[in-house]
Image 1 (cartoon, rainbow, N blue to C red):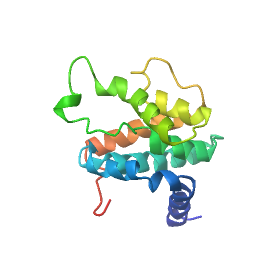
Image 2: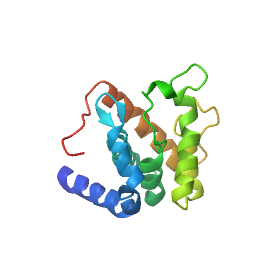
Image 3: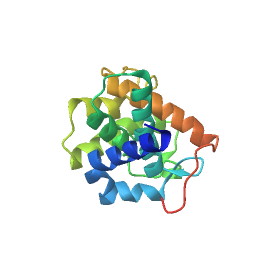
Image 4: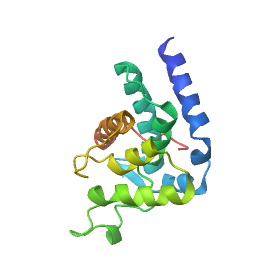
Length: 162
């Protein structure tokens, strides 16, 4: 399968497995908050889902793709603008605390699998101290770090209409 065929398959898999998440009002609201560079939290989550699938495929890791996608889409489901001064203080460091906030928010709206919970809770490892316990969480953690770097360096950019 060519590159464009593979990407088409990945995009359709994300839309299929994450349909309810992608169409939720709360997830759509994350378009308004910037995550890294000029990329919104929503676009970042979709980027992480896409690269998680690519890493999984490239390394031949046997992951549950549904858990991988859904965990990636919800890993930063903290639902606030972390650049806002109300969320910045030496006692409330976003990088350390947002996985727990994202997990609580996701649990309010979705029935999460054990793997999805592990992905959301531990994607910031080693900041979160306890390492991931499933392959899916390791893959999303790698994809998140890669996407964060690319977005911060403005190599991955926000696209119009996203």
